[in-house]
Amino acid sequence: MIDTHTHIYLPEFDDDRDQIVQRAKDAGVKHLILPNVDTETIKPLHLCCERFPSYCTPAMGLHPTSVAEDYKQSLKQIERELLDTQRYCAIGEIGIDLYWDKTFLKEQIDAFKIQIRWAYESNLPVIIHIREAFNEVITVLKESSLPIRGVFHSYTGTAEQAKIIGELGDFIFGINGIITFKKSDIRSVIPHLGISRIVLETDAPYLAPVPNRGKRNEPAYLPYVCHTIAETMGITPQEVASETSCTARKMFDKIKILS
Ligand SMILES: [Zn+2]
Image 1 (cartoon, rainbow, N blue to C red):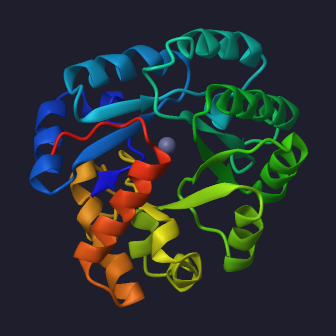
Image 2 (image 1 turned 90 degrees about the vertical axis):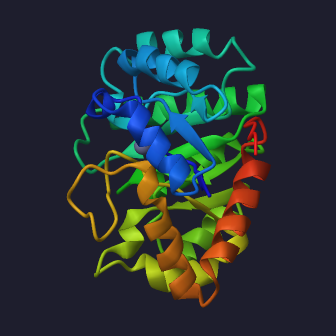
């Protein structure tokens, strides 16, 4: 299995990061993709990836909830990071989030547009975060009319929305612990996505799957997501693990997995 979206560089893991990585390896997780959040997280992200160089690969971007008045300055710093073209496997996480706050909608849209262009110019996939902003994100992608590829992380949309996304480019869907929640609608949606367009993620420290819901999440909990997908689609966890890893390697073709 590959955890295509985790934030183990955050302070939540400062006390036991080595054990977190060991537990993930013991649980059969072969690689971690670490998307950036804002300018403050760049340093801890790098330190984490330097400590586990063959196990963690960073993605660089400005998260939509971190877009504020000073977003142009933040983007400048992130653009400088991207000059190191070999370092990152994706632009992320980027997108639009109107759940917490709509104050900076205009700025969020602009930051998203700029970062999509970087993805195109650097030939990297994007990691897209959407919350209550499906139409806004689709509009930006349509208007950009650039051949973009990437993952819609933490996908909780409908089958119809997935179809619209599929018409916009080479996109896959990140499924996490939400699928293990009792009232989750995503279980009825994933058969429409098809196993070849799904990748696994934890989004740790957030969204811990059942039976650890509400606790700090970690990559070692990825098998709970894998098993629930297998159960839902009537295939084996081994098939889910190998299909999703294959899809992740194809999309994030810069990650190097040792074994
Ligand atoms: Zn995230």
